[in-house]
Length: 164
Image (cartoon, rainbow, N blue to C red; front, side, top):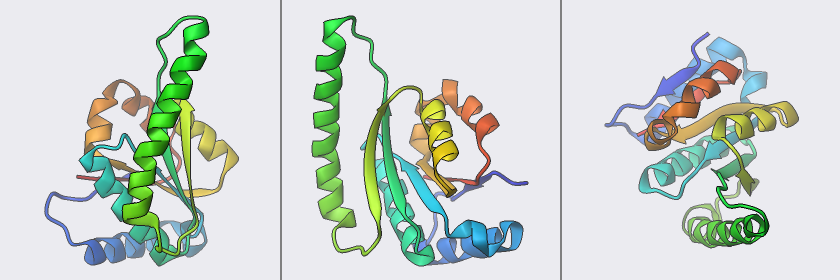
């Protein structure tokens, strides 16, 4: 089974989404394509592009979209709670900008989650708890998280779409 779909540097939204949907429909069946979509973000420009692609895919398939921001904490004792609160607040502010720009009025059902931990572990937990059809992430995130990306691929049971 092919797990990774890499969208080349030069692509057109509609054609790529239609092509990916057609390919996945033939490969995995239509019933699996209507489950949820999870999109990872780090609020970079490349992850914003991945979110745009996820929104269009969710719109086309009528799927729920979960936007996931993961991070690690390196503080000790009492500092952990304070650091987590600060990171969560900053992430919510960053998400509010994306929400206003990209999600408001899109008509899709979505949620935003911040979670502490390695990206591969957090996604694996989402796969256990939710019916998901796709993982969408930016090329930049796959490179920046190289140490856990290989672990993610080993755990992944759904197609991964990498957006440049």
